[in-house]
Length: 326
Image 1 (cartoon, one colour):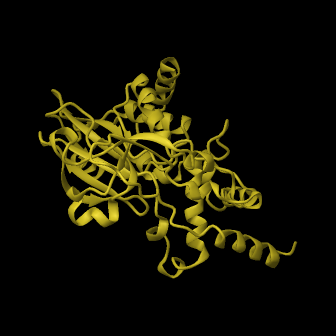
Image 2 (cartoon, one colour):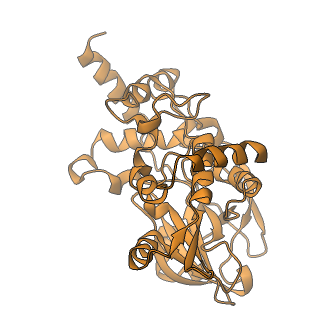
Image 3 (cartoon, helix red, strand yellow):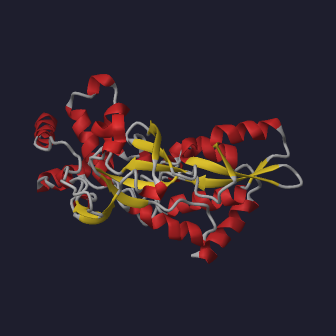
């Protein structure tokens, strides 16, 4: 098959995939406390040829109906107030505050890659390619992280999968956020009364005073866990820091968050070509071995250089600690 025919064939497959890529809206009664729904069955409605070129991925899991709790803003944690919308280039989120003042986050499991693409590519088949490859992410993998993090002594959130119905309490966000599946978790998963900072603030504190420190052993344990679970998207904004104080100065513990890429897979002819070392090796996928460690850790390159600066013996001690914890 010539390259021109191959491209035409692939384009035809993608055009046949066009759809909303969203959980179907369902009628929820006022007293209904749970719902059984699939997040994105469209990912699994593709041909064998499509799977050959673009991968089988986790399509069947995205299409599997799962029972989950119905989330109602006015009933949750004494009543939730929406503080602001959030999210990155692909995730929509809402920051919430409960009756005690504690903050929480709702983050979509389904992604919309449109904003991550240049404007001239958004109305093209490129958007459908990127959207289809969301199926390479495991929709429920973040639920596996808490017990692993607990065993390693790593601070962590406790996410829950919930369904947000068409709730009038959403107000101006109703049209955009209703009728979707979300991860619901604490924004700062630490004891009440303790402060946390983002990475930018911590860097400022470290620059202000040499006595201010980061627990680099904890950082390394967290980064080793990232490797074990194949979480390649660990840039600076994916962390918060618990602020403590001792006789020397301020002391910061890492809190990893936003576990969207855990157990990311890489199937299909085209994605495997794209994950080659000279293209985008961070998309190598979950496997027995990491083919290119530097490429896999590309998104975390600046973070690692800033927060893993102690002597090499740190790596040996933390590796032993992580192995014993497992």
